[in-house]
Image (tube, rainbow, N blue to C red; front, side):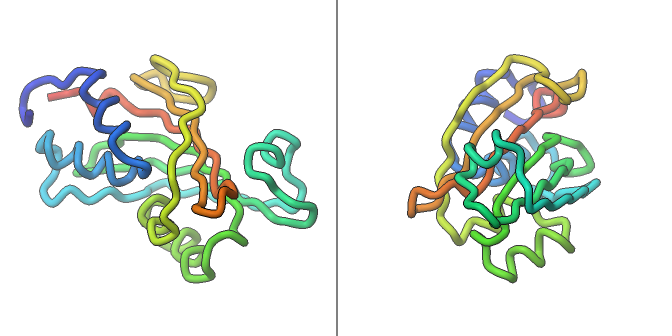
Length: 168
């Protein structure tokens, strides 16, 4: 597959294989020869927290009164190419202190940090091309939730996958 142009269907199929977009992007990066080793990193990290989530986030994340939520905005990169621009709203109280520290201070992607929690991905919507706030070079936008084994939502995601995923 490396070197030849990829199709959006091939890319979407790789994403659908995994609950973690980070893991899927790593495999895609390796198979496409974008980088070896294929390490996914989160750059341009922006983070914001609130004790007063909007009603939409309260509903999507099942946030209880007094529970805090955090938003993390990152570019997920492999081999110097931005494969995804993502917004991730999550409940820090549902992560370990070590996971929260890693998300606040390192370039580790959320999916890699939270993987020990064994979350599952719940796809909510896929949009061909860019959705609101995605860059013009977005080929596919995914809206999803990550759900803990207990059934409690862990995170709400908006992922803008870039043209770099399909380029030879």
